[in-house]
Length: 173
Image 1 (spheres, rainbow, N blue to C red):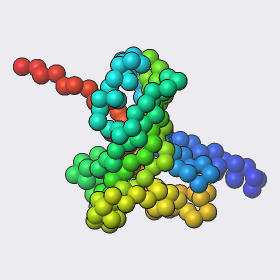
Image 2: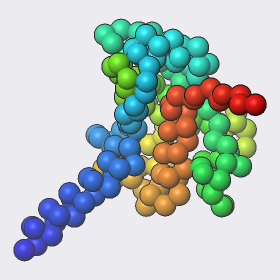
Image 3: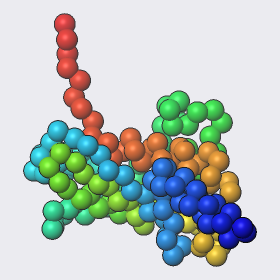
């Protein structure tokens, strides 16, 4: 009976972590999400190349491999920050390595080597610290309890906004 309860708990935990896109493997955090689109592979490459999100950008084997420029979490955006967000989430930027798998009409973003980049408020300006330093237990086997409260939701929404293709709004008169 004890083993059945443990198995159910593990399956539930895995399902919950799959829903929010964060995966912890061997002490490293990865965020992944698949997006549907109406664009072809070539249009996707063109969009991301011209997006201004990336410092380094290359295409190989039907995927984009890029280095994300430091991004700011908009603390005024209620969808992301809500009320009283943890200081680190809104007083530091995020950057890292992005791999975008391409297929016609969909793309999968794998965001790894996530970095917290200081902007001078909590962390020295330009200093880069691994995401895991702040949000993973020292043994590297689990997220810290504090991450599962607000930061997970905030980062999930921020990463989603960063990688979701923006559609041009039509000017209806």
